[in-house]
Length: 367
Image: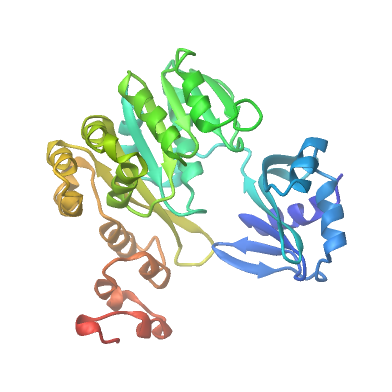
């Protein structure tokens, strides 16, 4: 057993989401969003490098020595499965291990709105799950893939960097390909997938113009494309896609979004009232004629208003979703207010008075 597994086993026993290892500090665990050190000595550069080199392949060692960061999956003998990022910094090496549960969670277990099942039933178009790093985008997408795998007879091709949840084929055939191992890039992976008779293509990250363009082509040609972006709202997601592609393709991109973008889900993770867990809270845009018209007429700033009026269609803005969850007592108001746009509406729920100076009120003054 690799020596690093001892830290990973401890992290799992404590219920953490991530294990952080860095020179000059003890190992740290991400517990319900907070980073906490464990009782251990500060790691030296030599010690940490020895730990990490034990689990790297020769090819990975060469890439690291060449100045590259590493992203890969690691399965310990007794510590479970992790998504790993290894990097170098001023004081030496560092690494983050994110735990990947062995069982793919269901949409029911994630307590997400039922409309996400409807998104899975589309036969073509694009559905995006967005949010900051560490907000559970991969988990939500894994649950959507599992729902498809359980309920439909499809050819599902996923492109990931690295592979996280492992999906055994059930009703569907699930083919998982890893960027850097099976394909050279997300764009090349989508290009190849389109020749492999797919019904559904999962693109782990729409990280550049070429990948976005290929994913758009796949969505337009009769495939359901699921993907992620590191954006913090539905409107920002649409603007990001339009801005990512060359100016001469702007009208074409707006036309694609108006016709083929089916939905945008933006999520955050908010602590539960007892502080022992976190709940995904979702902003949901469902494309319709009104929103499509706003996209093509360069009025995306008005989309939020349409979303507020589209509750019967399953839409919700983040503030409304947070407000409802607070009323249902499923999230902690003191944590929820961090994600609210109009923080004044949430003041009456806050119990931690130290948060009050940060709450903006009319005229720019503070509470």
